[in-house]
Each structure stands twice: as C-alpha cells, then as structure tokens.
Length: 80
Image (cartoon, rainbow, N blue to C red):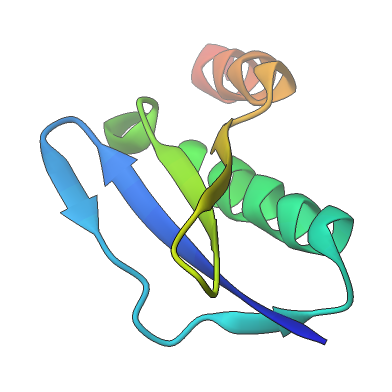
C-alpha cells in the first residue's frame, strides 16, 4: 500500500490534505482523485476545482478536474 494526498485548488483557495489515504497503486489513487473532483465539482461554486494527487515524497502525480459529464448533469438539473 502506498500513501497519497489529495489537495484541493479552486480559484485562489487551496486546501492541503495533511492526512492522506492509502491505495494499492497510482491508478487507484488517480481514480479516487477523480471521484473527489466529480463530487465536489457538482457544486456550481466549485466548477474550477482541481485535485492535485501527491505521493508521499511530495511529488505531484496528476492534476485532476471534474469530468466533462458533470457539466451536462449540472445543465440537466438547472433545466428542471
């Protein structure tokens, strides 16, 4: 198991993950980061959200944004 951190960046704000989460591999950590981005990115106040996935040594593995499918979901909810 490897330990990864998921920092949130939106607008000029930044929330640093100090606890992190264990994952089996990088793929699992990236999937988890995508799920975070998709969940939080649903909120219109956080559309600019980016999740920085970091390894234990501090290196950034990926910067993840909300999936494009979430924009369609938001528009469908607004249209109701």
